[in-house]
Image 1 (cartoon, rainbow, N blue to C red):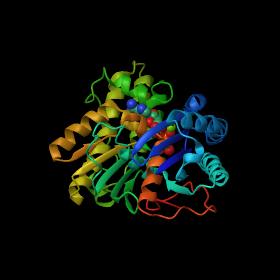
Image 2 (spheres, helix red, strand yellow; image 1 turned 90 degrees about the vertical axis):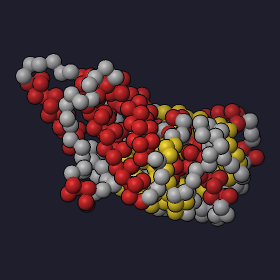
Image 3 (tube, rainbow, N blue to C red; image 1 turned 180 degrees about the vertical axis):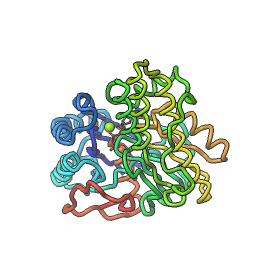
Image 4 (cartoon, rainbow, N blue to C red; image 1 turned 180 degrees about the horizontal axis):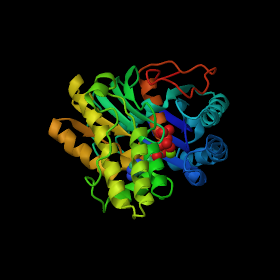
Length: 350
Ligand code: ATP
Ligand code: MG
Ligand code: FE
């Protein structure tokens, strides 16, 4: 089926068009620069940007795909989780488009969409190896840090654990700020870390002590790590010493990446699932990719990383999930659905 996907859960206005598992276009407009001076995404600013970007993005995606809107079999849209105001813009636009075209609409879960990105195999390196089930998925972005057990993309996704405070990307952004680096902090820290020693400072690995592992085996915490970095930096500054930014960045990055992969690999081993899929904007991190390769190889786990343009928020992954729902024979969503900022991952379609 030919599906147009609309994604507006955070600061990316994403419009994607797919035919089944074939990617036809993936247009992304981001309001990231507008958030830079606030050091994080401002919901109201994001929602207004979606309102301005959506229609031009739809036109661009349709032109790039070489289709007409009337050719579409369905519209898919992110219903949640995400920023309520931002989601509402996409949901409203999707309903209007579906009604005007007389096409069915599929309201879907953003996090499951990240997993669906892996299906767009003409965009991926592992072109001839379809996603196998079950698979563990680690989704890491500015708003999410979640570990999922995916038994079936359209019918059975279970949340194993998630962050109990900050998301990993958020921690990167906050620590960058502590180090005086600009927003978004992830790429900045990644770059600064290149010349640093990851063993220079031993920062704490949240929720990884034996008693935490008993209670929060698959959950994450990055707020203590951030505080620990802030305190370390402050002490140096108070003593009039220069802060070794590269070493702090490398040591902090190592702590985040270590904890992410320790828990993801533990889930694979505990549950006997020899497959790990990564998604979300933090997957751009060079050290995360390298250590993921290393640890999954050592544990005999097959690692899948969609291309980066499909890891960050985008409409193509939403369209891909919509197409799978159609292929599996699911009914369209009824038009009464809304935007649910806390939609649980087990609700694949609303
Ligand atoms: P959502 O959480 O809804 O998916 P988001 O906009 O917060 O949305 P993304 O756009 O997928 O998430 O990712 C942005 C986040 O990824 C930011 O926090 C950014 O700092 C982080 N990031 C980007 N590149 C890197 C990198 N190389 N290393 C670490 N973090 C990175
Ligand atoms: Mg973003
Ligand atoms: Fe996302």
